[in-house]
Image (cartoon, rainbow, N blue to C red; front, side, top):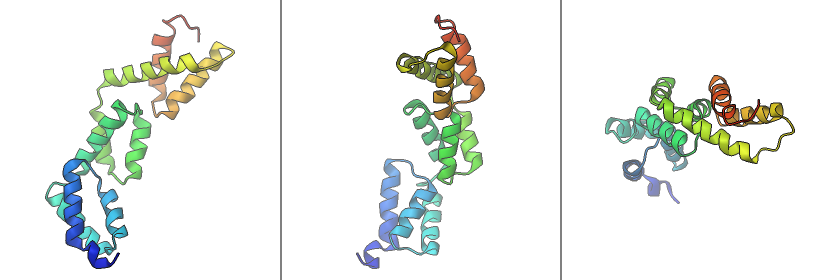
Length: 162
């Protein structure tokens, strides 16, 4: 394809149309614009225009990302924070979005993850079971103190000795 098939105006219209359908962060479109043959200056101009017109909003993107990852993918705060940082979202937007997590739902998510995982874990001792559950939850991005709290209050009460 020639460069004029990827003119800045065509790329802008495509981006605006796609942004109206779902949230994108600035870095995703920056990469797409560069791959489309734009210079960094042209890409920056289009990105600024998209932001000015409300098509791209990093804070809105971060809120949507946190909502989806915690609710549907059942990720913890650490993993979600890292994924947003890798996408180039600013730390202020990340922390504001993470602050909106419903603590009760977050706790229940970890509880259900651990209960489901406990059914499939093979362990020779209660200690080994606990360690496997801790590693699993930490790998999903949950905080260590919350993992221990769920294990102590929910798993111990269900008759497992850890």
